Amino acid sequence: MLVVLRHLLSILLLPTMVAIVIPRWILLGFAATDTRWTGIISALPRTLGVLLMLAGVSLVAWCISLFARVGRGTLAPWDPTSKLVAVGPYRHTRNPMITGVVTTLVGEALLTGSRWVGLWALAVFTINHVYFVSIEEPGLEQRFGESYAEYKRAVPRWVPTKRRNGSEGR
Image 1: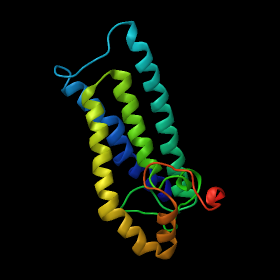
Image 2: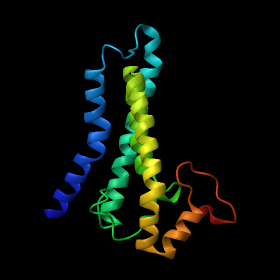
Image 3: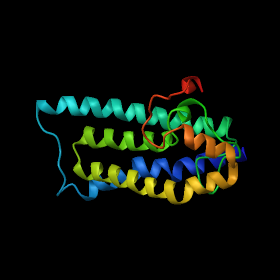
């Protein structure tokens, strides 16, 4: 029961706040100065937005599941994994959870036509990039040692690339 509460708390405080509560606040609070889609032309970006939101939420859920099952921890920095997670989407990029959150936000921006939610997505990415480079990655190297250093050399931070030297199957 305590494990479930730990995960629920981290999910409620992190991706839920970033991807649901704050965008809702932005949409309501900045409605007078924000943009919105109108007319038939809005069908394409709205449809793309829904698809991106579904993809983003699915990726976040998958990552949370891996943190619990493989990493034996949560997504929260105050309750981190005890084992390095390098499977599933973590084989292709070191930060798929943030990719999922930002994808969800971009989907929300497209669905609603909100430039402010789009700017929020950019801010979330930028804040996380700075955090990962300056705090998260050095902390992971300290906790996991050479296994994280090797992982860091093999897997790109944000954008998946085709691996060379026969490491495609890792």
